[in-house]
Length: 163
Image 1 (tube, rainbow, N blue to C red):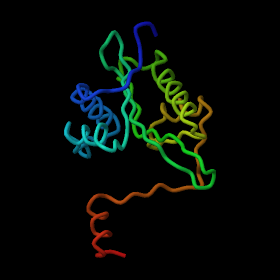
Image 2 (cartoon, one colour; image 1 turned 135 degrees about the vertical axis):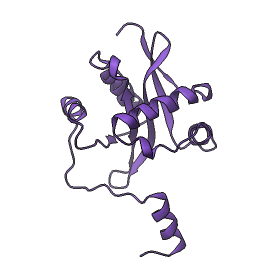
Image 3 (tube, helix red, strand yellow; image 1 turned 90 degrees about the vertical axis):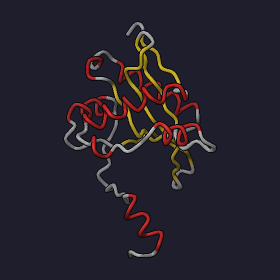
Image 4 (cartoon, rainbow, N blue to C red; image 1 turned 90 degrees about the horizontal axis):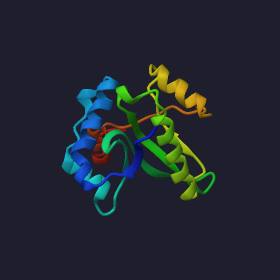
């Protein structure tokens, strides 16, 4: 799409990035789970060390898409991978190839960094995303179940009050 380009987010983009994150959460019916602040994002994306990086997809200079990624590692292969925490395109810009352009950009980034895979999670009800990723050649790995500890459970485990 003419007028669309991808760039690395900067600290001056944090307010707009947070707006996009909230839009994604609303789309995923998870608005109540967004507790991130600009300060949280600043520390995570630009702190020492940074824990993740954000890319913005801009149309005529205005952010209309984003991705947040970080490096993962496979002990089985001994190689890094790229994990896509978020990828989002504003609804009014979907169907124009921006998501595909963003995924290709991430694939190029992963290959340039010596990664041997990219991974991400998709909500099971998100049929458009499931179709999109399937069309890219992505495979669902039914061998694994995703788990996570919420902040409270994580703190309890660290304190030794569970298990």
